[in-house]
Length: 259
Length: 317
Image 1 (cartoon, rainbow over the protein chains, first blue to last red):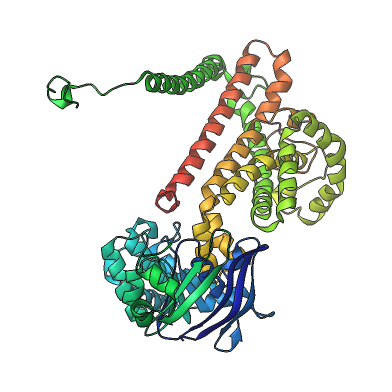
Image 2 (tube, helix red, strand yellow):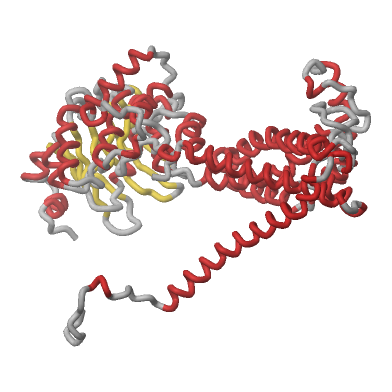
């Protein structure tokens, strides 16, 4: 439960193109770490390397180390499938499986992991996960309906329920609220406050107020120009980043004097 | 709405603006739709009109002397046997090929393989017929013998095993090869369109590649595969040349796939008998064509029904 991730000298490539260069970062357990920066700076790419989803894209590869509680995630004998079972992910656009019911979506991860589970235990787990995602009261009467029939905000919380149902150690969120209205965004942010009691959370966001509201630590990514690799410019406590950042570029970005 | 215009009356009375381009396009589209209905209606009317004499004739006058049902029955059985056998063999194979090409093969091999499979569809059915007769039938004789020996208790393999290999089994396999490119081309298309969003959702949950396919690709592509299979079945049901060349039909109704006596199929029977048919014989053949038409129609409607049954969960919403 809730593990620490140490990233050292991580460079991320698409074939021979260096997308992100030399990231060093330490992600604390039971806290929310926000990643901010302009479009194209490699925030999402970096996030996807933490659970080895980056490799899904043809030509995607990394150099450097990502260590979670002493376990090298890119070690030679590490199966990316196992990594992803420990590090869950929520995507920018809500993506419940359209061919499955609400219940089926939440249970999908468990069924994958081949753990034999009694029906009653599975029912409990689905209920617990949906409650954990603050969705239970809205869907408890229609668990057998398609997940795609929910509203966007509900779908995103369904995806969170699906991710936490397999009890990961870390939860990655890639702009989880950017496709949602303010009310649904607030619901997701409230939920994140509850979830950080149990999980390590890393969130990528375009919304600086959101980063300031929810996170304990913030990393600022930037790039020098088109075609240049993205870099981690500053990593600090959120208070410091938004109050008195160490680096001028961070201050420029935060205050809107960017570029 | 400009100030220069005369005062506007109640807006509901104003006809909507219709641009000529829109009207021409709408007209052409509507015309095409009506045209296809007319063609269908024309074919159906011809079939029914010409079949009526055979439908009403006393059973002794129908070729074979056992009435229309006695004449068409074995043909229906033969048609369905060959086509269903082809479908059973071809569908899993086509799905496998499509999955391999879209999700497993290295990109270069996938492209080549795609072309090769498409090429299968370009071979004329006469060539398939000769290939079935000259190559596949003799090659399958040992298999016929084996099935008669070991699986003889199943009615389909009751034997005696054919020594020429010109059997319903061979026909089914040739038809399977013929419909393989149709099904696999459609399956490939729908599999490759499975949304990355859902594939990534599966992978991020810790799915292996096969589990990802099970979760995000197969459910998404299911209706497409069914549609492809039905197209293939349609082709197999109506296939004439290949069947006529391989099969020496004419035997009564039997489900035995591996013996020398086989029922013919509707399409190949029409092709073989039509040139010499006269009088009521022609009407009888057309009546059998009507039956084929109805079977194909039923197959398509069944496919529609299967596809629509779980429309809520189709992923189209």
